[in-house]
Length: 208
Image 1: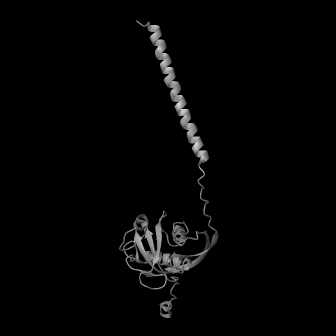
Image 2 (image 1 turned 60 degrees about the vertical axis):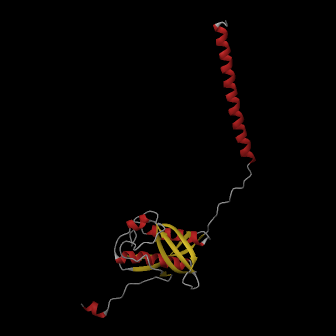
Image 3 (image 1 turned 180 degrees about the vertical axis):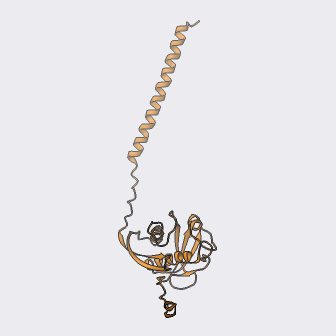
């Protein structure tokens, strides 16, 4: 019969051997990972830098129902679709400022912009603007407020990307009836200069 102290010594040595083996295995795995990392020569893509340039934002004014072209500066990508999305996000972010003349709730508004061959057959592209549902849900309801937002977007895109002939709107990738109950989002809009000015009062109005 094996004495008790020898059994204890045997299992202690066996446990020590297993523990040492586990440490050695873990050390080998870590060393292998470091070697793989050092040998990975996959090039890292250089960041795309965008130069700051003059842009024109068509800003709406609820007080007099106008859309006015305003010069600004913004760093834009040369890629037309990215350019259009960033430009419209910049435009709509202006309306969340405390001094905005066309107040809108802050938050992301444009999910994406797609530039496609114009299906009408005219020379140019069709811009499909995919709005976020949160922007549509929180947009103030009213004929003037909604039309000013749409005209502001159209004018800004027209000034920045003259190759666009027509503009359509989606909401979360799906057709949507109106912006907030009035402005039609089902129709195709021409890409035009949407600058508007206050209507001067008539002589009859000034005499009343």
